[in-house]
Length: 469
Image (cartoon, rainbow, N blue to C red; front, side, top):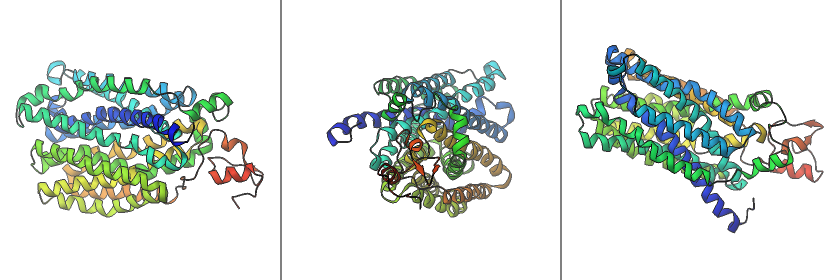
């Protein structure tokens, strides 16, 4: 792809729109489930368990998807690395959209008994598989098209999708809630279904946008040259863990805090604000919409800033800040103030956004072309399973047994893990993502695994000295 201004801007605008629209739709579907799990699912799918146990069971179904997200990353990563990014992303969008619409049509436990929560879990598993394959493909779509010096900038487009999705899901629930009334039984009977069924409109938009985008230039180049593609080598999963297992584990550990913070903010605090603090549903949902402005802004600024100072420094800084904030947030919430709730929600999601912005460039830069979809997706979704899958359900149990302060200590533990792993991350800002770069350059007489930066490529091509020393 040409990098002249006139030839780059038009396709990059389309790519940015496609990557952003796709993640917005996928995460909208994911978030409406989290909001419903906090507000109504304990009553309609787990009524026999009582309020506290029903809430834990509801968040357990929310967590189920995080267990299947790594499987989705492996499954769709395999096809994404072998068949291409575009076809795989259309598949994930269809799976997510259909599962979400079906959840909106699902009978309650009062109508079909135990079959209702079982079907709910099955559809939640489908959501987890879809979102597990979505994120890596969307970020690769942006990163493999973007000019090397602007990967942080273009990498933010799939990253702001969750912010837009959280705003859309909260706003949709808020409008429905205002229409039927805060305490109306209509919200529990049918109002909660509206955001799920409206997903059909977003699905149509997403398919239209993604069908208009061509396959990424890097994948097409790899296919033509038979270099840097997984088709004639180890399976993507085996290759990724054989040659880049360290990158997968370090990236997963460094992102654990992000997921814990995000799903505590978008799911658990919705329940905590209404049930523990006694705030109205409309107040909590309004703050949720407002917090997306802060969260989205932090994501955009940190992604752009990472093009100047590097990905590692930005991610590490946010992880460090997360530890003391974890210990402060619940004492603030325990004041019972609506203002304190707003500050806690916005700050928690701002910290998440500051770390999340550079990740759209960081993970694609860490992996070879042949394993990139699988490696980036597996690392991202392992972090999601560890941080996002366990945090809401543990928080519900800890809060009920020991109070909110115990949830703060849990979050601080996730933050410390991410600080340690982030310190060991490589800096990737100057790395080349071209397919086959790692196959043709030999440093110190030993083939170098991983992805080489542009300086190493230039030095090797010119017959220069070993840049590694």
